[in-house]
Length: 184
Image (cartoon, rainbow, N blue to C red):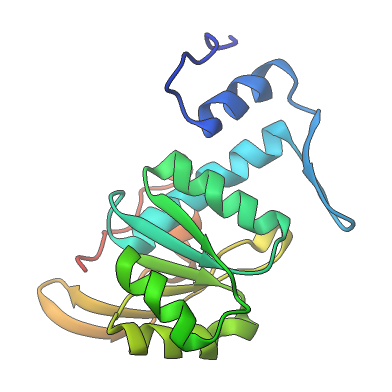
């Protein structure tokens, strides 16, 4: 059954979900290496949204995406829209000191970035005085799969290191029970 067309005030994700029901195989996003149909884009955004919320520990607040322009950034933005997190895309070509300023104002619950920017982003977070989880940004169907740092409390005890749920945080809640959400 095709859902009713979203009304004024709905999110872009809701509009794309509507299109995915009426034209599931139509190309929604592409680059030189890969393309996503509306159905694939929405399905992957939903899985990623579940993972972003689990990694951030909440569906409130902001997630910072620090990456070059590429389709995976759009996917992160859609997943943020789906999850309720505000997604802010920042320029990876800024210096760590320049990145620290918008990060300090944004106070993200999570940072998503490709492996090759991890050192710069880590330095920017240190300058901004922020300790937040970072997730690497992969390519294609491996968009964001590996939490490399988490600091907070887990079951009431201080914890610092890889996210205890590992890659399981990026599995769809429709296929399994979501892991316990850490408190940040």
